Image (cartoon, rainbow, N blue to C red; front, side, top):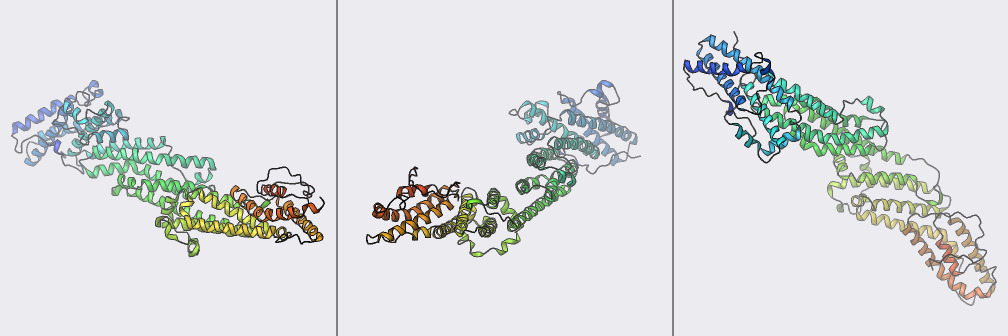
Length: 608
């Protein structure tokens, strides 16, 4: 006949040690059994319907404490009888009573878990234990002591939560030390796993498959990722952490049981939670801007890694950590691939239509919008690129940064790669400039697009990543483009006037100068009035530079000789000339090419 129910844990906690002396007498043994019989049978589930539905661990907790104490005393008596190899009939009685007691405690354990479902919510569990980390059900303490342990400073709900945890811990220790730890753990795992599963369901965490994700449209995929980003923090810091705290508390007497319980409760849900990023990283049909969602996912997992390591810190939950790490690596690899593909897409742009008026090319707009947004994730990109360096970086010219030490070392890899992508864009813009038949318009196009790129850098995190040297060098390049434009576009106008005005010029020479000037200026003006410079500062700088070289020379020539010629030759006054120049670079369309028939241009002169 087997008298003891075996278990992996038969140790007693300090608070549950039997009060029997080391060498009890026969009368003591008899008294212990009789006392246990009167208490245990009173709460026998088979005794009456009233007892069946009445909780043992009700607000008057003295009976519950007495019950646990008598069970522990009975256990000590059973060990004594086995060691003495005597009174087998008493051992049978004791074993029967123990089985009755264990069934009752199983029921009480389940009822406490069930009735305190909301009170054992993760946040309350954490609060209760932090308010009083020693919350326990000590069979030697009375009700007043228990309330004191729960803490007078915490709310009534938190107090009830702390007492419920204390009851669960007391029952678990009693059952485990009596050889029924597996049965107790089984009840706990079944109930608490349902809590985890329901919690994840309410957070919107499903068991996704790659086929389903591949079929999601852009908007729904974005919403699903956004929900995961919100849910993963709550799931980890609240749901799983709460389960860890509660499990460690209830089964504090047995590391084996608590580790097994926690692993079984959380592994399936947690692996599914951290599998989602891997599926997103593998998705080939998602929209181009998915890199930003991947960066947010990578950032979330990276930020939560210390919590992942802390919560799932036992061997039985290592699969969860491996899944989280796998997702982190795959997301990082996917980001690297997208960055590489983005650089390739810039190179492969094959548009052959020149932008009207030399304005901003759509490729520059889309690329800089993309890179500006990427720069906001510089910290995450730093982590990714340090592990997954793009191959293109190896081709990057060392001289591109005059002084790379001005960029913080951790961010330098990101800075170099983003600068490399901008360099690819600039090379492509150079090739687009060749589409213009007019060389001066090519230079204006280059100046416009480089100014746009610099503006995008200066108004985003790119400014700090690329540094002052990069901005200074490229700003200087704009000035070179502007000078080249001015030289090619306006040289004929400049050369139509004499370098020095002298009264010695003949009437025919002066007449010829006005003719050549009128023709040259009208040709340039009619052509360039439709050209555009979107950046106000660059536009004003170009106008001021042209006017500064043209208007004073023309004014001197005009004031010296205009009165000697008729209106057929002197069509433009110096003031009108300034007004005409002020109209340039706004992309204006004109219907006639004979704009200089009269000098009645009425707008205020902005560039005299």
